[in-house]
Amino acid sequence: MRIVHALRHDHAVHTLCQVLQVPRSTYYKQQNAIESYRTVENQGIKRAILELHARSKQRLGVERMQKRLEVEYGIKISVGRVSRLMRTMALPQMSTSKPRFTREVSADTGEYHNHLKQQFNPDEPNAVWVSDITFIKVNGRFYYVCAVIDLFARKLIAYSMSDKANTQLCLSALETAYRDRGRPSGVLFHSDRGVQYTARDFRRRLDELQFTQSFSAKGHPYDNAVAEAFFKSLKREETDRRSYRSDTELMMALFEYMRFYNHSRPHSANGGKTPDEVEEALDGKMK
Image (cartoon, rainbow, N blue to C red; front, side, top):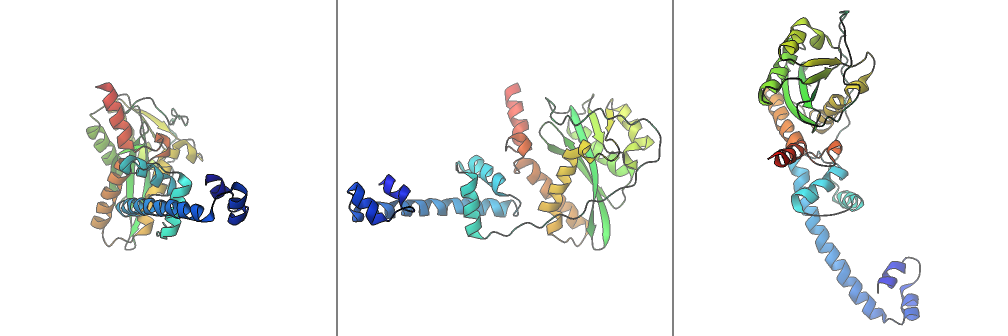
């Protein structure tokens, strides 16, 4: 029966059955049973896909959907099959991203060394933090978001929002990260050369915390690729898909997305695991 099924697109079924001396009625009876089982199985998988799609607010693509199906539902399935099922479900697509905001560069002539040198995979948490700023428009007004990410698990560890893209915006995110991560020392803190990060107050605070500051080279956005990629995901999966009536509504949306990003969104750099899953696995090994 498997031979007939495999060759049915190349030869007529009745010819195959004659050659193999298999009654056509037997083949069709078994084939209907197989299709029936597959249909029931697909329906169950579709329900799981729909739940994940709704819970993630349509943010999961095919590959991340496949990872979460296995982790959350124990469904082992190929990426191709997930893609086919999602196409038959006609799920809404995410919007494209907006152009990136270009900030003013400091005219200060101080020393700005690139200590990170695109080494994005440290061996432990709190070894390297990266940071960046973006903007989001609300009712014709711009708000600015500063994010701090721990490279070990690609985890968002702090963010701040303000209607001013100033040094205090970055200091606020830095202080939150420092407090929430247990006040570590010896962290390598990397960013671009925006005036917020080159400001005297910001550099002084890093010295007080015994952090080493690192800067991207001018005109080299890949030096801070992880932070750049985070904001690209934020805009594609959240802010470019919605309109916000107030800064409070935006802040609530950011809070929800940050939780989703750390707890439920698989990351390719983590082998398909979420940032929280990677750090929890490390904690388990150390206990």
